[in-house]
Image (cartoon, rainbow, N blue to C red; front, side):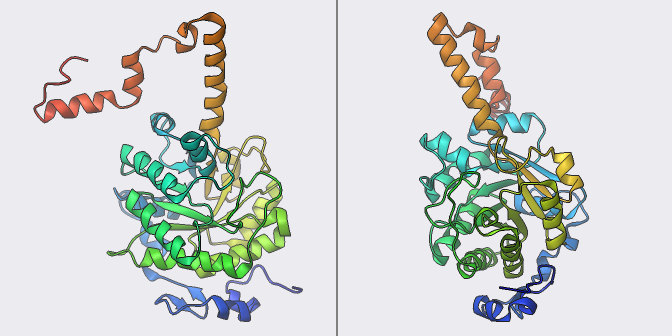
Length: 348
């Protein structure tokens, strides 16, 4: 399609026929563009950080500084990330599939697998924003809506929906296929409608992700993210940005919409530090496989050592059971039991 303007603020100005086809009768749609005054970033600039994780995430997005979200795959990795001082977590789809199913990221995990993992992670610290991978939304518009509702009920602060076909794969593998622009925008719109239908006015964050850069080129990827933004996506996520220049161009093209960048060591995106990503204008950076890849190395080493030496003494590195359980929140449980008048854990 020649002559497209990727920097126009309104998709109807560059593709009126497409804007018309994806427009809905939602209360916040005007000329094909979603605008909900309640969710204006200016409303989240002042005041203390909320105890509601979705509101808290919006406050973090509206205020200075990049949001750094390490990828977690289970309760242990979540506890370690919190202990390290991170204030946002990313529930990676690849990591969740690996940890819960022992399977590769090839659309094998279901919505229930993801929601179950999210319920556990979000329960560890209910105020901590968790951004969760929602793949393609697990079906058509009603499935996408069901996914948003289930994630929000689980305590997730926000999710990303992508434009891969249903039989998707990790965004850093080859051979990806994407759906049409119209189907992608329909997914985003379904997510937005579902969020807006949550009673009480939910702050749940919708992130539109495109995998089309490696399939159809960067221009198409930018165009799709513009469509997603106008359909109501709060954040834009372009998978597989191969250079710093492309990341800067993406940020400029989508401004003022926040941009998320995904860094996987050895993947398509360079190993940007979060400071470098912030300098390039990214607002969220996720490190999807930081925990599960580290676990593979550590557990492999421990198993080989046990097989060779007959003991786990060296790999335990002096951590006894109590020390391990303290990382998992032992002291909090013991303290709560005592304050409630319990005596079961008087001695541990």
